[in-house]
Length: 293
Picture (cartoon, rainbow, N blue to C red):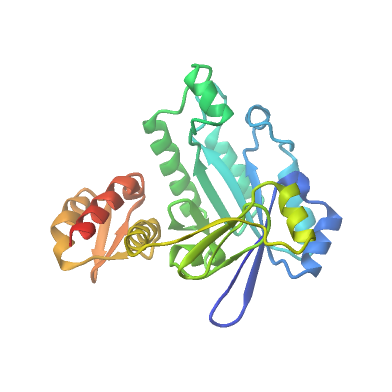
């Protein structure tokens, strides 16, 4: 669970849940506790994909979950989907997007599948049992989502996030501008402006510590000035708000602008969707320049 209070004092309280976790009883309890936003980990509506991901819910569960949430009075609903899946899965990405839109969410988050070496997917890929999606398909699906969701009235306000006007996730936005935030629950992260902390990941461990009145913290770190600068560059470029560019960086960013990867208005550099596909390399280039100045 995450919360973020705006300057006006209005509180956003988000619960992240899988569709199978959403019952009428749970929805009523969340609403009574003040929860006003739910992020659903749908990932896909395709049966084969859900089975491959070992998801517990079927294709109908997201719609049923959304209906229960709305019956409880929670109408700010975000849907998470994963793209760039292995080619052996007969997944129709455009159809998944269309089915998400049919549920009329206020927000949609899209994440490209990444292969981590110490995960089952990493081991399957290393053995050749799974072939990772090629970069061109990753780019094609990213751009297809931008076209369809923007056409449906969603603002592509961050590389992975789309919201209807006025429905950007406020707690997500807090992370990207470096605002302090509180994280509650297993694996949740918090930030006080200088130090980042995270809770232990296992639910049983977290619950035991909380039950004993102990700190459930799993670790923390104090960010250095260099680390904060690097994060400011990367996070600023992730959003439609952009990053303020220094005079000494104009020559560096001009080729990106000419290529259609970015725009520069009043010293604010904003990446286009094509630029977001190159986010890591662009951010690294700017960070390298700033580290030498």
